[in-house]
Picture 1 (cartoon, rainbow, N blue to C red):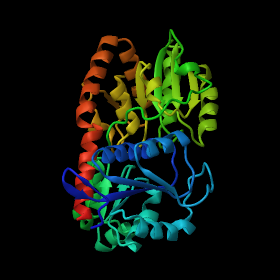
Picture 2 (picture 1 turned 90 degrees about the vertical axis):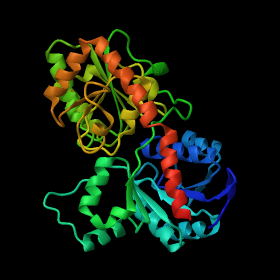
Picture 3 (picture 1 turned 30 degrees about the vertical axis):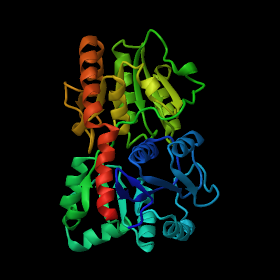
Length: 390
């Protein structure tokens, strides 16, 4: 075993994280938080960035926590979801040279790239499935299917899902991978870098005198269910709640579609698109409700963050994470997927019951601080990585 340092009297290995690029989104911030926690435990941490570009405040945060950041080449296809496979030999070579004992890929699109490189460099690897595991109807498990799927992920040594439901789906679909897979829930993200203010929300404050809803995530109309929340906003407006405001934090290719839908529904004045914020918690904490209308998720970081800030949450009961996090009526509220009528009803009810909102928000905050603490997540990863390194 290659050892880079000593921690608590025992030799510990180094870990290499691989990301396609570095944005200020859940995948990257979870990697950063885990890197910080492992560094506090004495690990040597390296980050390889395939496409060679990223958001500077987040890259600086990696460096400040002691991670060694290395671009696999100059910036290429900046702003695009892409993997340049011509850089794969360089990653193999760097893994041979850097001394890291375990390779971890936390981005689904980079799993095959990173894990095959680890295989070529004779290093164990971990592929993290950060999205929901969806199995087609009529699926029949087989040895060939398990091998094929493992190869599609880059033949990782271990597979980690971020929710127990996803783990169950994975193991039912690919029973031969049962011994190689486990669930490790994400840790709640705390603010990690200085805020980049949005020009459309001066000083990161919300309009006073309104009932504020907030949602955070990629502006993907179908997967994130943003058409559902816009339809719910239209229903609220039809009931006379014209002072409702929805703040959408994030960016994505569907923003124009969403703005056009808001125009058709007659609710443009109720919507505020603020783009990406490095610390969206500062906006979420001011909202009356956080809404996650997704059609599918892994274990939604945005939901954990909202609960951590003490904001009451409403989420669609989609596969695979919200129902694992929320106890309906106790720590948050669950509504059916793609049901704007029920979502509007739930929002209206909570608007009329501020005491219930506050009580449920406080209970949710207490729960995530214990069950989804960064320390608990890091401890589970540390044990997995140590087992692999041995």
